[in-house]
Image 1: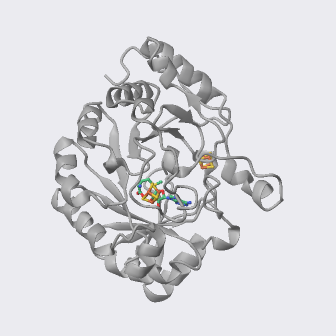
Image 2: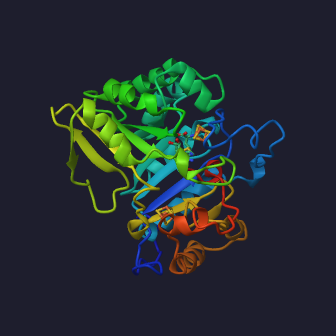
Length: 346
Ligand code: SAM
Ligand code: SF4
Ligand code: SF4
């Protein structure tokens, strides 16, 4: 049983939202320096990443995953930083795959997948999301700022398919002035492959990326751009509260998704909790502070005691940052220091 022994009375936050999804950042490190996530000016050579002993061990992550499953979590996504740079990540996958009724997923930049796809699948991973922001090498390198070429990510996607990972989703963040011209080529490349590209509005996560509203290409613009060349029609969500809005090609050759976190916030159905790699619980992607769970794990608390701490935090949750974003960013109120995306994962 997941979270055996944990009382599963309905756990709702202040806005009536249950906890259904958990995202665990397995490391704050990454081999890319995407300009919208870990810009070199902030994450350059002097940047202090977390020390190994501060990170949750795989055993601690599994324990928390089981406790969260006992509280209602049915989906678990591993992310980062870049999750595949943490050593022996397949060991963690194997441990988590043993938790019953838990849909396990992983988001990666794809750079290490040619070697890792098969071991991940063998360990029990079923599906995967791979980020790729352009098929044009110059544009992609300008975005990852690590001289990483497109062909290696495409090879990683092929390796994931060959290993039987399914579905494969492709995440593309769109930033105005950088990669709008890559939208159509991406749609065309993946049309008919069964692999679904999800175009993501550039978000104001953290403080490092210098986000401005003008940099956002809205989902409506993206859909209009694709529809003009490759006609689209809307599709019903797979389930209530699905983050991506789905569109399919009218000729039946597949579908795309758009994630409109800025232009059409979906806080009302947000059931996501995030755990940073050193074990802090964040109840919103835009939180300014997390709650230390590692301390409870390392001081001999029982699972039920840790669960009770999490219940207390979740019951106090009233986050809906994206819905009130305009008053912070457009209305000119002082910006609060938010946690960086690479710290808690997307
Ligand atoms: N390194 C992995 C990767 O890039 O897939 C996993 C972590 S990354 C933080 C998770 C997702 O967040 C990626 O798809 C990335 O493109 C997206 N992301 C990062 N910064 C973003 C931003 N400012 N706005 C929107 N999406 C962002
Ligand atoms: Fe690394 Fe992913 Fe952030 Fe890019 S988006 S810097 S790959 S963590
Ligand atoms: Fe959820 Fe916070 Fe994003 Fe709203 S802003 S959808 S509460 S993570």
